[in-house]
Image (spheres, rainbow, N blue to C red):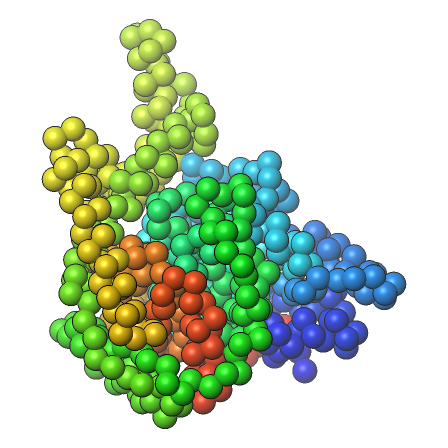
Length: 498
């Protein structure tokens, strides 16, 4: 049996018991990356030498009877929006090409402390802005189930890496669905924790009030394993929640009898692919068979979610990305010739640096946000969006007074073809229709496969829960995965022996 045949939980147990060395495990995944990633483009950098050195150190400590961490020997792929001292952090942008951070993101530091082996940094939409992973300055990621299709975004590289068995688990970030949507389109499990449950320190900011880091893996049990190591208060992050971290793995076996799951009728309206609707309804039936109670609910302002998100997020992006001007941070354009003196030359350098460093989608969102924040338009756009955001959050609070979780599709369709939506930004933005509300409300959500289309593409199911309800989200997803085998299926490319 190959290491890639094992779950993350089984890999950790095998290394701890001495049945598998950390070096052998790491080599197996590095070899798969070398063999497969030329077709998928999930990784922007791979640290073979450093990974094997870390793995060897873990094996030496285990043999010497010294303590090893809870993730000892587990290869992990990390989205290239998280700072790492030993590998570049580019956010898939020319603006940060080759950048080496002086510190590790808090999540990365916790992974290292748990003895995980960080094998590489994954491709993404530039600065996490996109839903298809086509906005990367280093080329799109290809969906392992169909290389002509998108893996989703912005954490598409992380999702594709797990789907193709190039990593047993990966770390993504979710601002409006960027963990859950690619997880759904790639047939894996992805958890977006409650805002503040996982530290954002060292995550290159897109929209600071929305961003959240979370795990992506084959199963809910594997996500629970990772969350147990990365969750918790960080004094260095002012938005980090100071709340106890439960054992996310200990609660998985509890049954679902009496758990109330809300179904929103509006999620099945026009635009939802019939195959997606059928698979989602079958998932509701499976939960009902497991003892859960399915209850019809309403989210009255859900139809305003995309419009609200695409005001709030670009406004925050406009502010966060202002620092990348070629002088303080980021790519600096070559000096140009100007007769206007120092001030004119400086402004020209700012403009050229940003024009050269940012891609079209990032520029689009910066302009949207700058316009909405400008004098005379702030109240009409940004301030109004914040008021609607508050209504959306209240919808969730009201819903969670009636139910324990909310279920529904992750996206209206399965993975779409690369290039299919790039000429229509509005159509691309609508792929976030079912996911943005989770971020606007600051609650948690998890997605996992619930079926496949006739053409063999994964279909994702989403559960959303109240703040700090990750235990219940993971338990519900795990119980579903004990009843079905959708999460065990692999794309043909993953079956290749490397």
